[in-house]
View 1 (cartoon, one colour):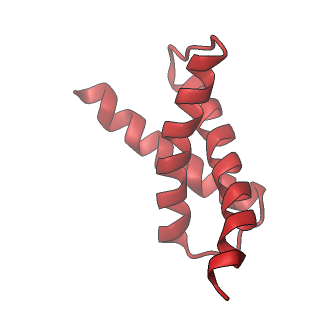
View 2: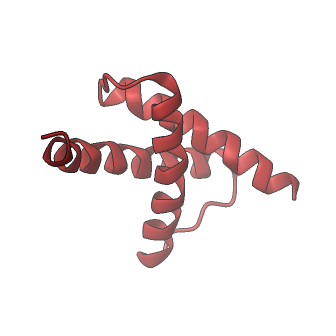
Length: 83
């Protein structure tokens, strides 16, 4: 149970880091939400290619990559719905 709380906190931190890395202009709360989604996506993609994080640094790096991917996809998809 404790590890899931740590993972959620790391996913939120990854969302914040990805927003800085990708220079996202969205609000902080939205970036944290995208980071949470990105953490799940990053973990899923990593497991599909055979990577597994066993520590905090690995989880943070995988989540950061997933959050960057989610922000990138959001930038592609979101303008189509704003019309």
